Length: 179
Image (cartoon, rainbow, N blue to C red; front, top):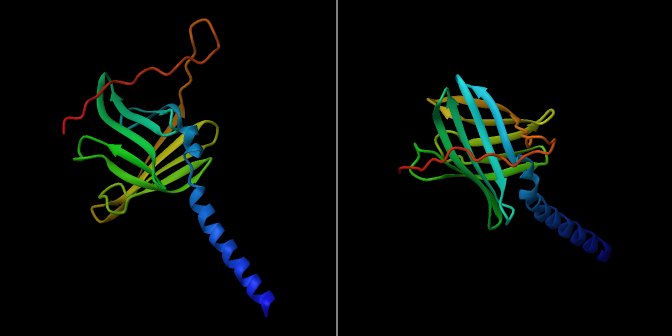
């Protein structure tokens, strides 16, 4: 009988340990592959995302779209450790404040962020696909119907003049929010 209690106790400790290790697997370091500049086309224009790793390991990002000489969209983004959770914040002009999305899944090849309270999107998904490609996908419900928008981008490599050494990333256009 004592052996049964010991075995049950060990199983409970093991199950508790697995629960804690599952939440600790949500790590910012697995998102550092996002760092750099990404570029793609869509909607009649060029789309860009630029991500930088801050000293504390958090990520800051900026997205913008150009149609000809005009900037038609901007977004300030961040991915930060906030207590026990990792949060993606999207700051766009049509929202009163940055919108948080909690990280619910992460691997070295992608991440899923979710906010079921937000109108659209409810989920933001980043996937590091074949080669050095990025698929950013937003999902949710619009006008009562499921909707998905995909952004396919490739990493931008820049080289210094006269060398084969990648140069530092250029600074994207500066945009100040007006709300």
